[in-house]
Length: 128
Image (cartoon, rainbow, N blue to C red; front, side, top):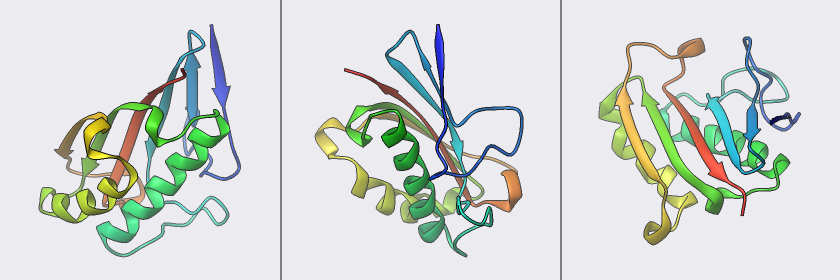
């Protein structure tokens, strides 16, 4: 059993996928988000700090549509165009989570991201 989550407050998918899927009524799988403005469909930000802020705003909109918050996230995966941007991304990322209860996370450098993004983040959240 799965439920599709869609909101106009986050970018529409740019391929054959959904913004998020709720599986088994509890697990919420949020698709990788890049720094697209949901209203214009254009990239936001010229550096990884600005782009991470938009990515997190997109994730927040999808979580809200699913009735969740950042506190419900149990796992994130961060994809960076350049691992040298890790500290700047992490500085923004850290403002969304309390250190003691932050989710498990992986962060990797990739050769390219969709639309030339500098950062993409996906996550898994759990409904209580």
